[in-house]
Length: 578
Image 1 (tube, rainbow, N blue to C red):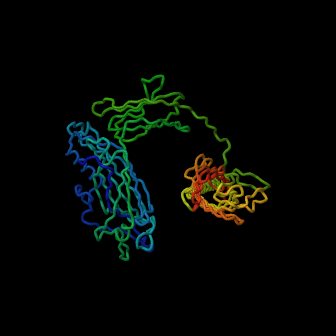
Image 2 (image 1 turned 60 degrees about the vertical axis):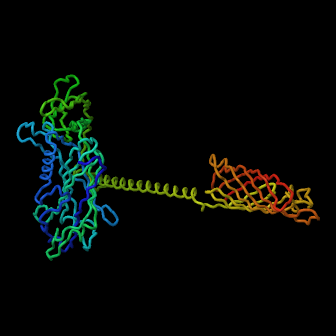
Image 3 (image 1 turned 90 degrees about the vertical axis):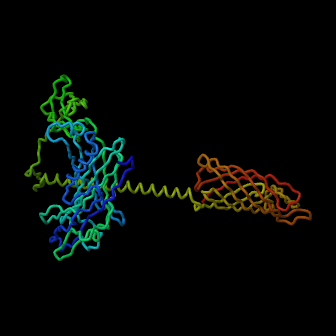
């Protein structure tokens, strides 16, 4: 026995769907061209070809008995299993089914109570046997041109699951799983023909699904399923097995004593009480009155194996009112109580309104001298109502799907706007500044990262840094004679707060300034400036397609102006995007 391990996967081989031409479908028959021994997955469980799952389970129980003897404690769990068949190319689901698992019980004691051979005082060993029947007529994936029709033959997977204890690891258990593959023709009286039988022991965590990937492998040559009367033989691997995958998922949880919530039918007044038995014991379910709790009505009094059960009782002859029901489990050998609980419920007779006017085939409604079948009209009305309900459900489903798709598309577009530099916008605005003058500017900006590049043209009639000797305009009408300014401005917004209401900025610019009129000797008619500023911006209408303002403060440096210091540079801008 190995230590704790993760959920294990059994690698088993797949035999599946067979295909046959419709011209020979009615004449197809099952052949028994099987190897002398069935192929085995676990060499320690060398099952002969005539062994059944039941015999393999009992042999494995005997093997465990030899290892642990009377100290062995059976593992009692509820188990379910599902089957899925997928295509190997696109992994499309070709068929799904659930195994119809039935619990089986095995006890070492022969006759009477032989304590030397009992497993935990007469407790039976619990295992499951079931099958999943699937059609052979699935979509064509082999080299055959047409598929075998659905009523020709069946592909059957038989499954046996034996939970084994894992001493020292209470959260894990061991599985012994046997899988058989068989085919059954629907045109002959021949029984199932088994092709392969696999057995494997592995360890898994309790209460967690155990996925089994049944990996395919090439069968021994000569193993066939269907032979047509024209002599054509369908080979498992070449014609189908290598095109599919098979999966089995096993779910198990330990059984516990429990008393479920009762239900009582409003129409028949039939009481149903669900309860679970965690181990082999004598079970007693009793209906009690709240007035007399000592004398009850026994509903169940028998020996039960570990499983889920349902106790039922017709309550029509009992009065309305409060009741209690009690569930008691006794040990098989000692008779001691191992579980005891009481629950309550209230019985109320429902108000039933009987129909007084029944529609009969002869009931008609006479309209304008013509007899109309009232029952047929009512049936047609119900049919039309059902059609409208179905159409309405489909329309609602379509609307919901369209809404979800629109939301997904909007999220994609918003994500692109927030994460790509391709979200470029144009902008235009006016500004005032020491270096730029009263100007108009045009530019472009991106949202992420928040950069803007502007080209400005302005008039410096109030002040012109580093220019001198020109006639200074004294009135507004002389603004056309003011010095000009042409600038290239780059602005960066490193962060945005309060949805764009507060945005710090960093700006750098290059300006060229010149005068229109000639200047006298000693004056300066042209100048180049570099400006660096910091400030704040505001976008009250949001980041996209809105209005913006900015106010910045910094310094301007003249290029080639010897002996002259920098000047203060203040600017204000307002702009709109398009």
